[in-house]
Image (cartoon, rainbow, N blue to C red; front, side, top):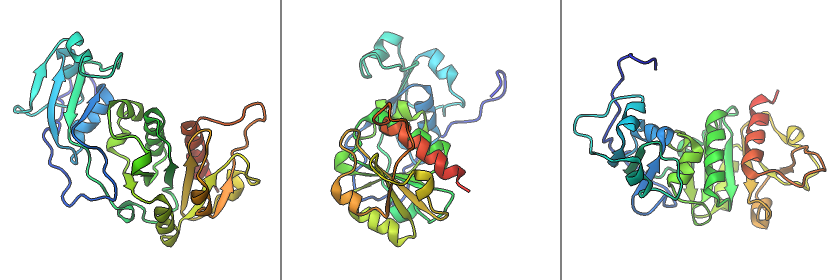
Length: 263
């Protein structure tokens, strides 16, 4: 928005999604987000319930929108905000405390659209990686990401900062049983491709023309055997032999690009 333009109102204390549900729990307790993009996206998300915003004057001025008159804001200096976040976290003058997002069922968002792949993560626990994958999922219009609740990071500031706002826009489905979720995706018409460096086919060769679910495992360990057994095909990225593997978030971004550009 150009400087001087009238800012539109932010949603402020938005109500949580009615009837929210999910197999797993997104987070326990309150979620604390920081940085302009994560905080601004959370403030604009109608499915967030906000509790309190700590901010500098410059932080408030940087927001694309105006807070409601009754929004709970506590002005603070940079040093005070630094004590509310992880060590050396780039809060940019904004720290928001809010409720975790409500859960969704897989079939709420996985509608079998060939243009919108599903990303399934098997025991990817680093919040930086999951946040970066959410950002790529938003960039390539993925339907959702799916994780097993016990082996994935909770919502939080580090993850949200890496996601750069995508935590609020990409559905994140947390399930108790990842293998069962893969079965549900197959029943919904998705071709499930597990990414594995030892696979014979490249991803371009394995991609179908219809709906696809891209399954990625943790770095080093890869997918668990049971998850591999629930894939319809295994595929690899055609990377040079000079390097053993890619970071999982980079692999996700390349896989989503390949799915978006398949003929």
